[in-house]
Image (cartoon, rainbow, N blue to C red; front, side):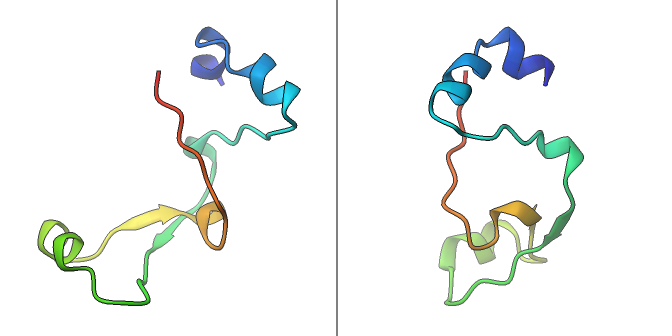
Length: 64
């Protein structure tokens, strides 16, 4: 929340009706891909985790 406030995201998110969900407050789950991912399997041979709210969602990750 601190970053969202300091980066002035909250008024923009509010204007467009987008909920801010801090990723430090959500459950992370193992990602199971639907098709072969050549690069990701090389970079993360043991798999990787994603935030549970991302499953089945269109997401935007804003970088400052």
